[in-house]
Image (cartoon, rainbow, N blue to C red; front, side, top):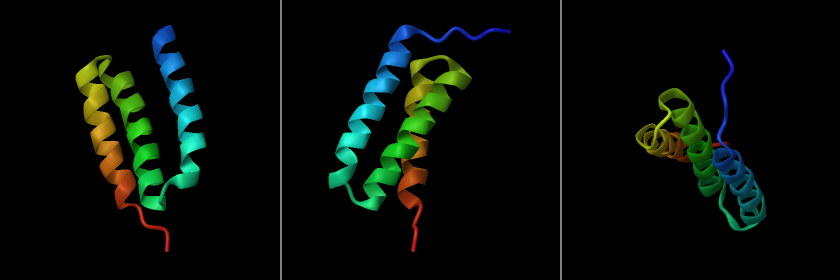
Length: 72
């Protein structure tokens, strides 16, 4: 089974990765972790459901999990 990834998704992911690396300098560790979690959760939600609701739900869940990670 071959999965075809839409060009829009690839472009959006590339732009998000670029912006997150540029903006990471001014973020606190909690904000950075929340952003990474939201991006990963959104991508995973899209892959699993293939729709916007899964993407939004995955991003929300990933953001919450990422924000709760504490490195002390």
